[in-house]
Each structure stands twice: as structure tokens, then as C-alpha cells.
Image (cartoon, rainbow, N blue to C red):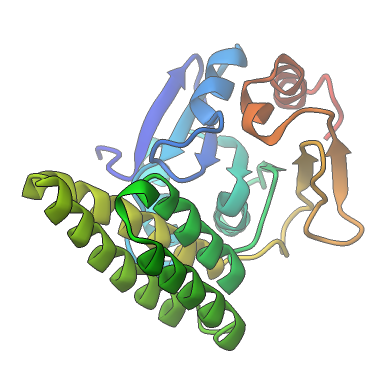
Length: 258
């Protein structure tokens, strides 16, 4: 069976190391840099574009594809919001065989505040093409939604996606952008919020093992009494730093006790 939900980052061995993070581009280093810097006898796979939830159905689909390979999963890694997906997948894997090690880098939960923050960040790249009133109204909307709908993430995401689409259509009109470019702008934002909503269904509690949290400078683990390694490395460079590469290599080879 062809792996449609996963893409290979490296292929150095039989065992699998699974990486959970948003598959789109970002300024911070991603698992591609980590896989390139960890020369162990394992193959790193990265989750592809996640479909809409529920999360349980996505985990079942991801696991079904992995099971057909007949290859053991040595570790599951999660980054940022992807950490809450990594825990759920690792528990599902452990229900069918030996539990994999679970390492979570700069783990965060999806909240109404984080959705609002991502919306404001997405607008920054187009801010010079929006009026002051449009920006103020958009920021006000995000703050209002975060305050009044803290437990209704789908509602927050839907409202922010709608407003983002309206603003990008205004930008496209002003700049005479072709339809395909407008579609890329709105589609990329929608896909990211869908991913964050999916991650919002997960969590850091696990039934089968205790995850290891690896935190960059200034960040704290999201769970009390968690196994944690704090590093003096900036968030953007965490997954490309040689110290992190050595840590992951030592964990995978047993040089660093799990």
C-alpha cells in the first residue's frame, strides 16, 4: 500500500521515526533539518496534509498505512501543536505493539488565543495593503473571539477564516492578483487552521508511556511534573541545532537513557 498520509524525510534504516508538525513552510526549522542531522539507522517520515477531523479517524488512517509497511515504529516526534497529535498516534501504535519513545519539542496546545494570534501573524505580511480600519477591525475581532469563545475553537476558526478570506479578496483586488494566487493565500491559511483544530482535539496525557519534553529558551513544558530537557537554544533554531541532533541520535541508539 502506498503511503498517502506520509512523506519520507530520510531512509537510512528499517525502523520508522514519525514526525508530526504542520507540513507547510514556516520560518522556524522543521523536521527536515532534524532528519538530515540525525544519521541513525532509521527512516524518518513526516505527516502530510492533515484532513479535517475527527482526530480519532485521522489517527486510525495514519496507523493503518504504517501497519501495512510491517516496519516497527521506534519513536514519535512532535513539534509545537503537532505534539498533541504525536501523543495520540503513539498511544494508538502502543495498542498494537511495543510503545515507541515519544519526544515533544516546544509543545503547545491549541487555544482560542493561539488561533487569534496566528490570524494576526498571517495578516502581517499583507498589512501594507490593508487600511488602518481593516487591520483594527480584524485585530478587534480576533481579540473578541478569543475572549468570548474560549471553548469553541471551531467557531473561532470559522470566523477568522471568513474574515481572512474577505481581507485577502480586498488585497487581491487592489493588487490585481490572479485568482490562483488568491486561492493559494486563502487555502494555505484555511489548511493551517484546520491543522490547529485537529491538534486541539489531542492532548499531552498518555496511556502507554511518559513523553519527553524538549524546550527551547524561554519556554516551559505544558504539563506539570513532566520529563523535560531545557536547552539554551532559540525556538526557530531548535530542530536544526547540533545539540538537539545529538540528543535525538543518542535517544534513538540508546546512548541517552529513555
